[in-house]
Length: 129
Length: 106
Image (cartoon, rainbow over all chains, first blue to last red; front, side, top):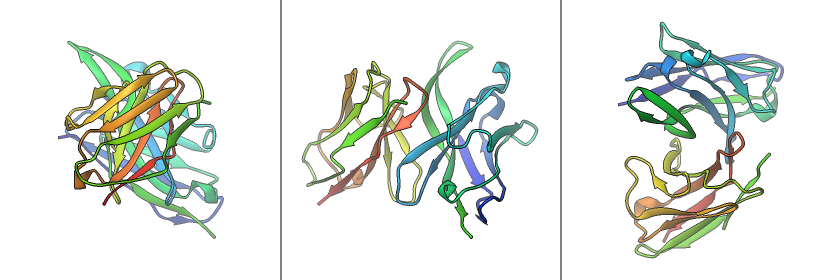
């Protein structure tokens, strides 16, 4: 069974930095298109960014509010995903979830479908002075 | 950016009743819409994708319909465990979510 476990959430001051991790089990992270999605307290869901598969060059994309401040990477030896966050703002306060992208596979070929099918339990980041 | 708007904000129904949740996109998104269920303290769960395809494990009482800008999630006969917040998400242009509909079971 696919399992994702986030960690690293903490209380950090505005302008500070933080690194979140997402440990994956029962699948190879480098073969999956992975995302970070966040949810501010009592609010809805917001896509943060994604990293493509190793076969597609580990390309990353980010939502406008976090571009240039947040960076997604993968450690294939540890099968973990990371989210590095810099210049944190109070509006970055949220639970951060990592998630896999749903794929449709025929034989050895898989096509991403741009929905999120496996999620971790989330880790809380609080940005406050 | 494609804005996705859900209605109603809150829905309160009894077990056995039919629930109809709506999602409207600011631009046509073909059938590129999904629905998620989120219970308190839990991660979202994908229920429906591409407007009408049930994800693995989604009970048959959940169905989705629509295309273009107007979409519907229908729960045919409510059970107590269906109490949750439901989000829609478009995939036509990156990824944006609606603000959610809170479904309460009386």
